[in-house]
Image (cartoon, rainbow, N blue to C red):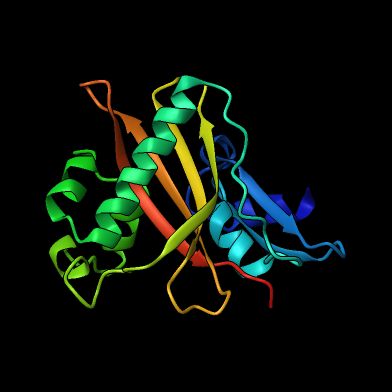
Length: 188
């Protein structure tokens, strides 16, 4: 606790503002600190960089408990069909109008996003990629959700990527993609 209080004290915002955002500390399997920060951690980055799997991750999907889970996994499948098939129009129809805060942060730091038409052209898109180990987290509001999966690019020789997608409920009642992130995630 003392460490986190010191971390909070070094920031320009007041302790009251920062404590409302929260702080986190991650430990590895040996109890050693592997990361800390303010606000919510980016779990996919933490998993991929500090806690990679120790055994191969099974391809089986997580349990489905509702119709919303099925709808989200179908939306995820539609995303991957457009991605691997080079369907720019299909891809654009999936995206929410509002930009995800993580994407905004990335761009404000000088990051660059390649347009979908460049990413989906022949030779650039991930043709032959498969996905497995799909899972869904539907937030209590019922209007926001996350899907995850392992992407296995063609010819990757067992190296996989952990992909996470943030979905928001569109005004038309359809799930819209707000963010898609991938990180390396395989047994070393």
